Amino acid sequence: MYRALDLVTDIIENAGASVLPVGHLASPQEILAACKAYGANALAGDTSQIVQFTSWVESAKMSDCLHINKIFYTSESMSRSQRSYIQSVFGRDGLPVIFSSLLASAEMGPWAVGCFDLTGPQKDDTADLIFDTRHMIVEVMPLDFDLSTGQSPCRIVEGETGMLIVTSLQRLRNPLVRYVTGDIGSIHHLPTSASLQLGKESEHLRVLRLHGRDLRNSFKWQGEYFELDTLKELMSNPSWGIVLWQIVLADNQSNCETLEIRLMQKTGTDGLIAHEDILEILKDHFYVHANNESLFHANLHSRDDFIRSLSGNKVIKLVDRRGKMG
View 1 (cartoon, rainbow, N blue to C red):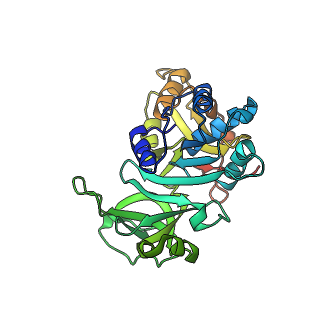
View 2: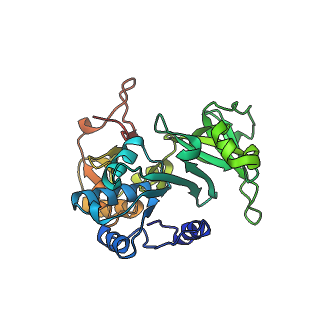
View 3: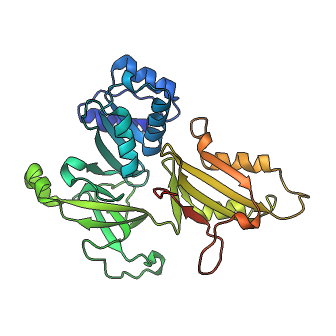
């Protein structure tokens, strides 16, 4: 179900699997039909796509028609509650659903993999991924590190959390040097059990513990990155008349990530475009389509409806409630 079908198809085929590409715009009915017709035993796609399909299968009571026992997710981390939910829908006869993941982006390509059999069970919602130090240099810098100054502060020691900066040792045509990923994480040695399984190659491998995005600059929804600076420029359009705006990310009852945009327009609508037109522009910006439209909301609000900081009573531009109960 992945957007980059060519890339993921090649990776999975090279691993010896037969692939049924359907694309990220396929409806749940189309995905179900392909799984039933060919007896598919694995799903591959963005975390949000997989959770949405799982929710549809549960509501349609179609889990008995499927034989899914492997999940290969990309683009977003998968929380413990999401994995538990998928297990409850697709698990059969007490057998576990096997989860694996791939870390990749348009800038870096695929460069790290997640496998619980190697890294062990997660005790929190961080993601442990294995990467090869012969292919990628990963620097962990303090969170207040400013690359634009040209100064190079001391890197954080192994095991401590900071901003991830990567340099590819493979890309020659379009070099990737000290690229600020926008992610927060830490570097760790492989568990002893994993080193024993992987043999001599393990000396070149490390575990990247991914904590999530640096929400000061960007966020991720439906497998896409969105920069706050770009959104600020969009909201400052004089014809919109927006005086306050706020992004609220949350999980619905089916563990699907929702995106709510709260807007407040200035009084007097002379010369301003209609709210419906603003909504269409925002839908285009956030790649909203028929399969995820129910998870996107953009509405006008009064001043009191905005979530504010406890200290300065300021409107918080980005509120992330994902993975939080209540």
